[in-house]
Length: 335
Image (cartoon, rainbow, N blue to C red; front, top):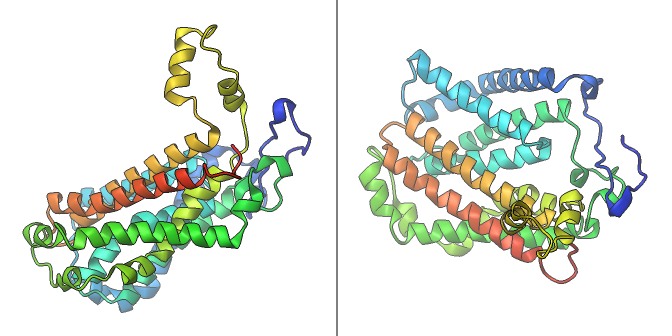
């Protein structure tokens, strides 16, 4: 734990909750990252073996055959890159669990909605993916200040807001509503024809004709909770740092050309910078993971079809991040 003594200019050192694995904080990062990857893959293999008898029949009926070594290596590499993004992006276990739900959910939603795969199979699969990211990061990486009550008072801004259950509920409903609205608009407009054209062997598109906006908005509340945790909480709870001091002291009359360029391009508050980076990360990872999982693992799915499906969820992520940025700038939320 760092000292609770406040630094000059109101900056407080970042405090972290210890990792669960004894001595993990003393291990070099170069060693902890491989351990996280190994733990993730081992847990995934173990947990999926437990549900193989239950889920194999469902998934095998719509899955491509991955018999070539390069196909398996490619999927393992993609998984490792996803973990690396979380590790070197300084995310903690709550961040990774939320990101996994938001990025692994879309391909599974496609299967349960249009391929008649049992929801229980897909919920088990999604739950395993979330556990396999949460547990390794919780073992080998401390929690961020916004996710622990042990952080010094000045290390987290707006703690009363991010810990308020009503604010959390409203923001979760807002995000879930945005996801439901984006999916609903797609269902009643371009998606039915697109699915038939680019998903050979799709079983049932009746969901697009029977879509109900209220039902969709309620069904996406879990994704809204994850979006609130990944986007709103870290951004709203971000404490001031040296970049904020630098931006507030900017004087266009005395600034150099490079300082002026930096200020105009990236001279936002820390909260806004975090929201931009996390929203861009979520949209990019969601698009790429959905495209890869759909195109590489679902039999009959074309690359163009996977791109179209992935674009729905990337759009929802961008709109959600933008809405949270707007909410974060209302009166009473400090910079």
